Image (cartoon, rainbow, N blue to C red; front, top):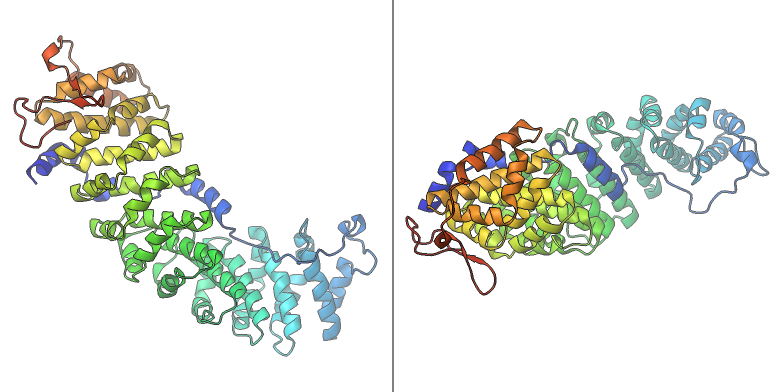
Length: 518
């Protein structure tokens, strides 16, 4: 522990582990875009058999055998429920067309209040079903279109349909509620205030049809999502035991939406993370890091990454479940987003204590991580840079020596040419940590030689004219502290072993047992 205390005396300028771990703040836009690729926030219920359309129909004129929009409205306003049903079904078919559904036109005509009215006709489940389907597709559109459904008071009626004896009616209500919840934090909270979640959870049994189950879990995930503001955790905490059980389901869609829900619930304070961990789901969650289905792997990895932004004990739960053995291969994954997420996850583990850093080393993760730092796409390189610099902040002297021995200096120095100043600062901090550790052992000059041979000194000198003041100050500090103009004694040059690795003299002055030994 003496070496660790020595490291902590100069590391990271007083930052603690909580500060070094990085949550997803500031990445909202990027994540939202990724989220749309991975899971639809809203979905239209498209008719399985396309309804015949014609240019005339697209222009709101009736094609043979089809009702016009005006005829639909007249039928829905009729007193005869048989005519109401026929007209509502025609409305639903129009809104279920795959291309260009006339949602705005139907809203302007005034079909929404009629559909909401038809939801409260338990003696006519067919009419309820068609009206609910129509409202589902209206709510699948823009926020304004969704608001048209909410403002007509649809939520209380949709809630009642969740207990309908007709499964197709209940499922359609779940779908409509999911679309409303997916519109944003305002409608999400309105749905929760209606106390819909307990009914959704009660619909999940061993006998729940798979189509209904998929819709329920997707709707629950929408009730957990959105960060501005995040959901009131107490409002959704009751779904955690169910989500923990659903992680063992075999259906990939159920698994994917379960993981997305958990990713939202772990994207927050340590208290939220702890509540998720207490369900006992970590072993199964980590197991899913080996899933071949990208739609499951993506949210599973994101959830694991969120958990390791927590405290050391929470991070240890992930490590003890074997996550490090899965994270290494993910750094070589074919999809760049997975590589980036894996590197981000590792960066939060290396932000921990020296025991956790040692486990990262023992799992063989640093070699592929340094490959990402050297040759990965820029987003992945940035995360790898954080992982390495966090390692240099919390690692022991021996661990820093091992990092240099593994060849970290070259890819670190290469990134000093980055056009993004924040990444340059991260690398400069990492180099400073390594040089500071070496200086404590009288080995700074030898590390400086390695940096110079990697082209790092040229980069540092160039950074003295950088536009960003922080970059300039950090680069200037390194040059003034560790790179002098004094000629270097040939005897002090680092030696190279048979594998081409740098090997310092183990008998260097001031070097304690187990110190820098590259």
